Length: 566
Image (cartoon, rainbow, N blue to C red):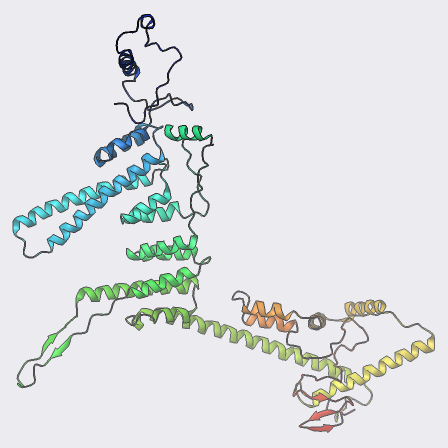
């Protein structure tokens, strides 16, 4: 019988099985005899051993490869495993994806059978009605199954960790998941599916002969290798958290969350929720049983229904795991405290002691931050008060130079910063500046000097500031200049909502830019004609007790109008 994988015989134009005398005098039953001659001819030319390394050509006249023989072991898995294992170790040409995937499937099937045997023996060991002989036989079977399962597990992991093994990683993942092989599942997700870059597809050195023959018959090109599937990073991380949670490996869960939590904050929520859900109900506390109450001399006995020590130990262990996760949350600042407390509240069996260290750490940090902000606020308030006193002193010095001002009876000159009398200084300075501007204008008209341009005034003002202004005055001018510019309120709210740039520092920074400025008219601080330390009289001035001037220069006090002094 010809092998199913053998190529079709090729008939030569001159058949050497036909002898010269057959052409002159054909014998009886010539066709049957010719068929026997050709059969014998093929038998003589057939190789004694299969050729493992055929020639690199597209011809069908070549030896066989390992894929051509696997169907002979379809009903003999043990021999199939030996055959595939031999090819994987000793035949470089035979290390194809079909052989490798088949070997992995056979090994996982054998491991699953051994593991089922371990579970059956462990269940039988709990049978209290079995005799001594059955227990001894069960213990022997249990040891045998465990050794077999351990050996098969090592074989599977050796094949999976082999970088040269050309198995399909998606098929391998499906098989380890289907057979519930935990080490293989973790290995596949931790190594084969961690990268978001698809690996290079495996390309066979040569397609099977039946595939090549079909392609030549249909006049088609060999198909392109499929691009390996890439799982989303978030899906892989959540599956790893699930697998580590099944094994109680909190350290590995925290390792994944710390590494991927910044890019995917949902991992912290998933990990915390799984740890919270795993907390079992605590064991009931022992209670005293005083009998039925008929006999007063009945001694009280202690009973503890449900007070299992194993349940209490499991409850304590899960609470310790939750405390560790909450400590990591506080260290990484992954979730808001209200979110963490809300997750803990999803399980009614979570005690307050499990979250107490986390809450204490959060409150201590908040208290320290509040104290620091209070100290900074007090410092800023002191600096503002100092700046207000300096500005007030500068105004008093200018008012003292005015005619009839600065005497012992001058209320405005002897006023304190922030009082109603101090606001009179602004009106006096505005009037003095207006008179000075009018005097300068008349002097230029009398002398025939042209009006200076805006550029000349700005240059003179800058030269005056550089020559006479102090560092504090320059700083004050820069602040007022920045406050006179247009403010991007949309950018302010964006920075305020951002956790990294928001907070008190953001408000203080934008306050200096004038984001809360309520003046309708903003003076041009690069104009030398504008007074440096005065405000226009047609707008509200927010100083001291916030006096308001009307259009005629009168101060509005409690709904009444009073004339501004001076």
